[in-house]
Image 1 (cartoon, rainbow, N blue to C red):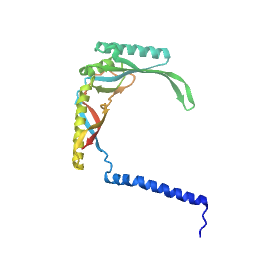
Image 2: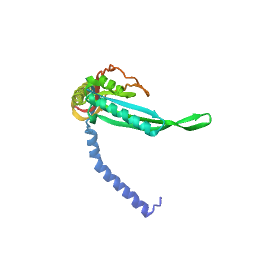
Image 3: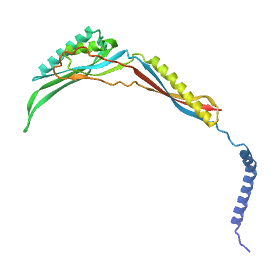
Image 4: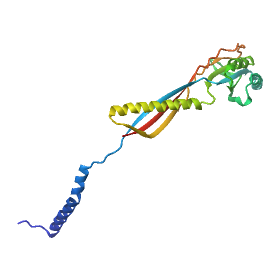
Length: 247
């Protein structure tokens, strides 16, 4: 004979009763779930790309002048006089004052040096640079020639843009959406499903790439003839990520 304590017998009976309740409650529900599994809806996510090309209608260029003199006052005054001459030349070319912006102004001392180290100050450099927006693309060469003729000894960073790119972006966007739909339809066909409505859509606009170009530099650039400038074309690219439902 086994000797069980009263507490052990009560615990066993409680467990048996709980098991019976769980079996009674879960049996039909489990069978129903097996007969009718949950159906989840899926989708097709693709990335489409569209491009549009346009002719630039404006340009930006950095124009600068660097001067050197033995005294600070002389270096700064000579630099200011040359910058003013450049401003006057730009104005004569039809450049509005709001399209001329100072972007850099530096003043530094040049040290005399020898094998024994620094030997005092040789003089002072002043560098003044302005950003010029040229809104008539056909005048870029004349504007650059006028700037160098007025004393500019550094010109660089010429870049082209479209003043209002909205129309080009719209063309690229439409092409990107069409590309996304075409890709999604091909995937749906391969997967043996039918393409549904758009569920999620987002876009990324890629700014056109400019390739800066420069024209020399130094303390005494000779007056140059109007350079031949080719603005080429700009490409606006838009990517869209689209999730389509499936049927």
